[in-house]
Structure formats: C-alpha cells, structure tokens
Length: 289
Image 1 (cartoon, rainbow, N blue to C red):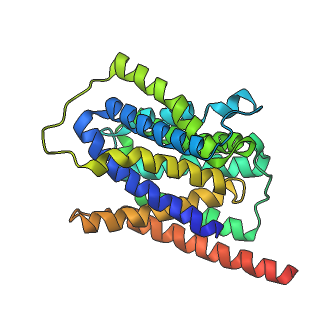
Image 2: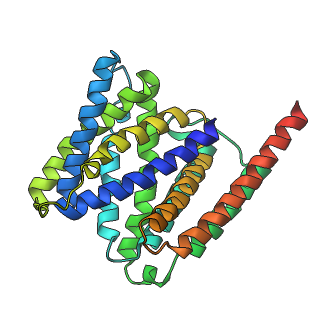
C-alpha cells in the first residue's frame, strides 16, 4: 500500500504541473502562485473545520516552515526555466532530491528514521544516477547558476515534505497540508507585489479545471504527510518520480504533444532499479521470516 501511495503521489504531481502550467500561462508565475495557494488554503481549511482537526500543536518552530521552503522550490525552478531545458531541470531536481534523501536516511535528520544502505537500496542507488544522466543534455553547460538552482529545488522539495510531515505527526496529515499553504500564501503575495505582475488572460482561454491545481497541491502534501513516516526518504523520492514521469508521458501523448524521450528512458532505468530493489527487499524479508 505504501508503494502505491508513493506512486500515486507522483501521478498527482504530474497532473498538478499540467494544470498549474496552464494557470501560469494565463496569469504569470507569481499571480498563479497566489491563486494556487488561495485555493489550497481555502480547501484544506474548510476540510479541517469540517473534520474538527487540530491545526496547531506544540511542535518545533521549524516544523511550520514547510510552506516557506516550498516557495523556494518554485523560485529556483522559475529562474532555471528558460536557461536550461525542462528535462534537465527535472533531472537535476531529482539529483538534488536523491542526495538529500540519502543523507536524511543515513543520518536521521529532521526526525527521519536512520536506515543503512543494504543491497536492495544499493541497486536503486546505482540506477538513479544512471537514469538522471540519460535525462541530462547539453543545456546544462549554458548556465551554472541555473544548474545549481535546479539542484537546490530538489533539496528544498525533500526538506519541505519532511518539515510538513513533522508537523503532521503532531496534528494530522490534513492539518499539515493546511499550514503548508497558509504559510506559503503571504510569501507569494509579497513576491507578487515586489517583483511579479498580474496579467489578465484572454477571454475564453481559461477552463475551470485550470484553477484546481491548489486542490491537487493539498492532495500532494497530504499524501506525503502519510507516506514520509512509513517510507524511506530515498525510496519515496524515486517512487514518486517514476509515477510523475510516466504520467507526464501519458499526458503528453493524450494531448497530442511530443513526449520527452530522455525522461522516458531515464524513468525506465530508475523504475527497473526500483523493481529489483523491491524484489531483493521482499526476498530478504522472507529469509528472515
């Protein structure tokens, strides 16, 4: 079940990226971020009230910063976009996530359980950089800053979900999602006022579903809040990535767009490594039993 939820998170992320991309095309980066956070805050807030969920708890101050860290991911990716290809941005983000996840598992930072690298994990750890290498292209030599920020975006993605999960452990997964959006909203508003621009989309160009990315954002944080305590940071990173890549390819095909062959090849390698890793892990469990 944990594996399915982790893959499902990647599926939701892929659809969310599509919807948010359409919204951004109409309103601009920062205005779209505000709309997304307004929708996410409203939905998760209403659900918390309806379920009488405890929102705030005695948790470390840093446990409330997941939304702020998540905004950094958006800023980093926004800069990198246009300087290097989207495929390289995704690959470098995965590399940042992979490195951060392995360190969290090894040293138990941010409350993550310490997990040693056994043979099953090593297989996935080898397949990940191979898949990432297949996704990279020549654009990475054009802007060192864009490369570093794409790596940083991957780091902040993992940190954000770990911080959100820490708060959720004291409240609930849904409450953690609400706080994430609530904290991120004023930051997005300030950024819009300082450096952004609100553009008005042409009449008839926006469909209702384009405004639902915030709802999927709530779902994504909720799923991460459930899976983070139960799945290693490294395995969760790769499983959600595989779900995201193959859903993205399917969406491209369904919309008549050209799917990224590099992303598909990289996803296949990583998925194969994960499958072998899962089989080795299951075999090890059976031997112990």
